[in-house]
Image (cartoon, rainbow, N blue to C red; front, side, top):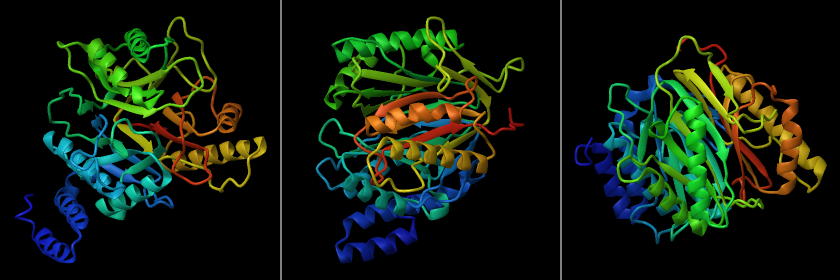
Length: 412
């Protein structure tokens, strides 16, 4: 739908310009395009009830999905947080439309910003892009942004199953069927570039053992310290894939770990069609790696349906700094996770991929201590844990988002 052909856009644009609200014009233009295509993807997206922040607790998607790289506020790097959020959504819209999609297809957003105030301004913009019944799940993280911007995003959206399956640095398709989720891996080096390259080589071995290869990678996510070294990660990815292989989408998040490794990288890959002789989920421990009761090195899942949660935080606000308070927070978050996945038709036996965001040592340690009470030691999700500056929720030192599959999945 063109702007000139959208009557509501023309009417609202005139009103907005008269009032001098150029930002509102950008928002309304995006909303009009969203309204024009919303019906196309609704049968493939189901949304659970809204969180207090106004986003669904989880979204259930059916069929192929597409995963983006880092979405930048193109054209607004010197703007306010709200202006940069609008620019990010416009850029996301461009990426999706280039592959036959639209904002109506977005199932989950990750929002990274440099402060609580920046995230709050961006959330307001995001709420204005989608009506309450059509919003994506949302995870927000306080993270230093490399370069001049204040915030970035990445997204998971539904994708047309009739389309081609290109791999580009902006967008890649994850077909329904066999999918491979590899937990974060890290190799030691004083050089971010060398550590990144060695980690990519290690990930390739893990992927090959799990039945995939580097050509199947749909998205790489790197947690790096310091954030200013993001360019070294990008150079390593370019070196690894070379000029003869397409480079998949890459997302970079600041990592504040005290570990002696500067980068940790996780990945998602396509695994081909469903194999009738394989289970719904396989929890894989490659040779040379130790098995953990609270996370799997690899989860291989065969499904047409994914459950994508928003970032989940404790139901009660944390009011003190103590080991007991941290343990209570971890338990509250995991109880909330149980409620959300149960509402979506899943359970703790069918968790595929977890990302934990902790902003204190106490939160990290308490999560380690509490998880064994909830997870089946034979069936924990693949997982990465990132030490970040904040979760975007005041007083919350732990947030997590999950990918799960329905406990009963007749769509395999």
